[in-house]
Amino acid sequence: LEVNVLGLCVMTREFIKQLRERNVDDGHVVLLDSVSGHTVDTDDNGHFYNGTKFAVTAITEGLRTELRGLNSNIKVTVHDEKVTYCFVVLSLILQAISPGEVATEFMLRKQKIKNPTQEMIQEFYATNFDHVVLQSEDIVSAIIYALSNPSRMQIHDLIVMGSQELY
Image (cartoon, rainbow, N blue to C red; front, side, top):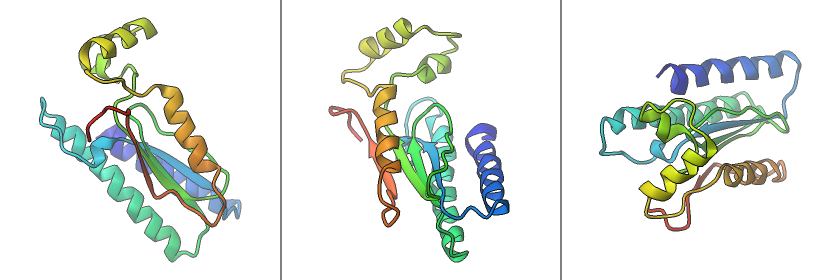
């Protein structure tokens, strides 16, 4: 809750506050969320994690509405990635990018494995998943895609999943 919701709110508030203090009205906020903000997990209390990600989805939509009410050109994009939040200034647009399973240390840390190596991560996903999962560079590509659109266009919500992953 502290990282997924409160951290997101504080960072976003301070970032937009800094833009407005500098009279910047054409930036781009990219928020990393998760496909878990669109579905409900049935495994080991996963629904609590889902709740934090549903909150990110709602906060994103509320922020978009707030910025439009201020006649701001700030765009907000949410990226559903189970790792971190990223704020990038280009043209202030709020966009959502929601990835499915990504080969990161997230699942290993959930199992209390500290400091997993890249080899451990790749082996974990190859062993425990019956489909190919996304790689970090796939998420970077989605963010670049969202940021490279003309100012008249906003990626509202981009759900990115492995080609064989079920929603």
